[in-house]
Amino acid sequence: MMAKAEGIIIRTTDYGETNKIVTLYTKEFGKIGLMARGAKKPKNTLSAVSHVLFYGLCLFSKGRGLGTLYQAETLNSFRTIREDIEKMGYAALILELTDRLTEEGQPTQGVFNLLRDILLLIEKGTDPAVLAAIYAMKMMPFAGISPELNKCVHCGNQHITYSFSISGGGFLCPNCQHTDEYALQLSPGVQKLLPIIKAVPLERLGKVSLKPKTIGEIESIIYAYYEQNAGIKLRSRHFLEQLSKFRTK
Figure 1: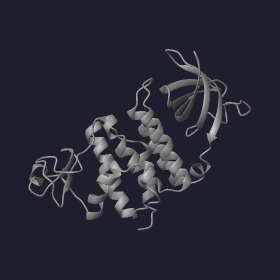
Figure 2: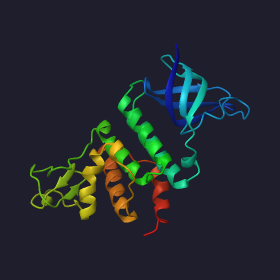
Figure 3: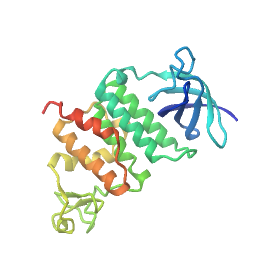
Figure 4: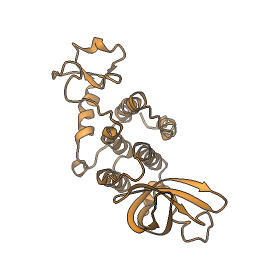
């Protein structure tokens, strides 16, 4: 079956001397694997589009197994992202998370729209660390691990201050903090920001930037939560952790 769809390449794998297998995330079909024949040849028409972070319209055949990519037309080259090592690092994390949390052939338009819009915001200049945190938080329901950030996860009551329990699944009030000896103490800013990051619509985000210490604390919580509760340890995090050492304090 021939099909045409808007998609973003979230992963590529070399196949033989001249071919690539691209993993395309689409609005209509979800995640699909496609053979890009001759994509490793410089003069092949697919060589310029068979790369991670490609975003455009793709013409391909689709069946039960691996399909074939025939043509692709770029909608946005994400040039600004590609030319900035930090932005590219966060884009790689977002794509890896998408790949880990989605199943082939199960379209979820909300995920595609979120992925596309987050990448477009990074391209336009919004803080990539903040956007990656927002994306990771909004994708947690697909891993079945969405934390409770509006009240105490243990007693259900609302309080002024909380700690965060990775194993317990969210905020703990002072009266219930004893239920998790490893509960993380939160700075006032992070305690306020975590529910906002989880709930904020992208169209209401605007220009936002956080201090390195603040976003670092948020990132540590989010990715430790993924690792402990979903068994997901992102390879791209190692690069970003190394990069963070060069951030201005």
